Amino acid sequence: MAAVRAKAAPPTLLSLCLQAVAAHLTADAAGAGRSGGCSAHFDGFVQEHEEEGGGGHLAPEQVAEALPWELLHQLASSLPPFALELLHHGAHARCCSSTSLTDRFGKADGNRRGTKRSRCEDFNTAWQALFESRWPLHDNTGHDDLVTVDWQQQYWEKHLQECLDEAAEAALLPSFRGSIGELSMSDKIMSSVYLSENISQQYSRLSYQWTILGSYARCLRFQNVLCTAEVCDMLQHSRLEILVFVRIISEHEVNGVCLLLSCHAKTLLSLEFIHCQLYPAVMDKVCTSLCQPGSQNYKIQSISIKSSPISESKSLTTSAGLLNFLSYAKCLQLLSFNDAKMQPSFAKMIIRTLLEFSSGLQTLDMSENNAGFLL
Image (cartoon, rainbow, N blue to C red; front, side):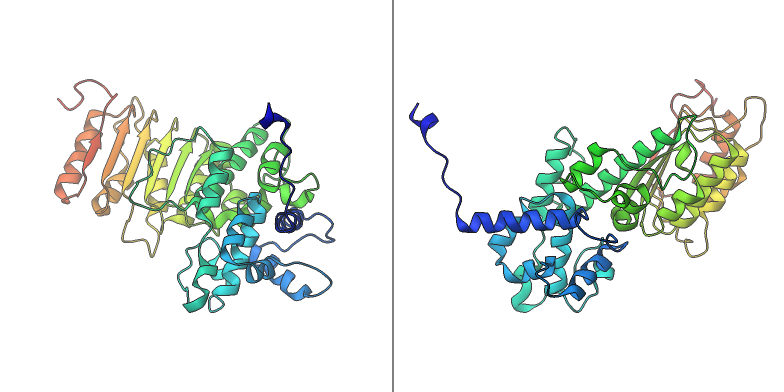
């Protein structure tokens, strides 16, 4: 009973100051009370704050410069994601002035110098707390305990995937007309990253989210309706390594896939198709898109085709493009054709190609096709 009756400890002057700073950064991140909004990129946003200088405005860099690391870490733990993003880059802008914020955005900071090193320490613990708070049931078993997880990158990548999924649901509605990039994300998603009721309308648009956060995306899943030139343009700042495509059927969708592959052929490591129609002519287009000038090292390590026919039922036509690609893909470690309606002749040609060109393949999966199809 004594514990129940005990009064809460009164706030200290320090805690009140930190709360005020947190509220200011949170409102700034959401665009509250600002005319004209913020710049399209965080680096522009930070520069805008720097140029404003006086007038009582509190820029993230000023906060990062004024507070010792212990208090900065305490402040970071109370900020919503977008406010933390501003503070994060503000801290690096102050301590790593030899590297432009544009170059560092979405990348690891590698130039940490002298007495300012503590200012350049990351906010990984704060980002991990935000990630686990928003997605408490997320399976982290894929993370190697010996490798430090970049929780900032993980957070924004998963956030962007949620934005894409929500946009796909809206674009699939028969009543949808207009631009996918102009779609506004739901209040649920926006409140998760801004924690503010006064969010500038432009900040909720899909295109805006990708403009400022797209560089964090490495692994993405695309529904068929998202395979368009517009979406490809939104992803121009991303360095995609893993792509998953779902229900790619029409020629328009195939062209969208090929456009995405062409743009990211140099960085792509893994490619997966689920419930698609990948007949020989389509596979030829896909493989041609992967073989872009400058990507001749063929860094792809994994190709997986699941529940997606690659052979037409009454045709012996095979994909010459796929066979040609396999002959050069020296880094390929996994090749899977699971339930791909594969013809026996095509399967034999694939195996023969892999053997002939001394492939370093470790796993070849041709399960769930016709039993005994190699006999």
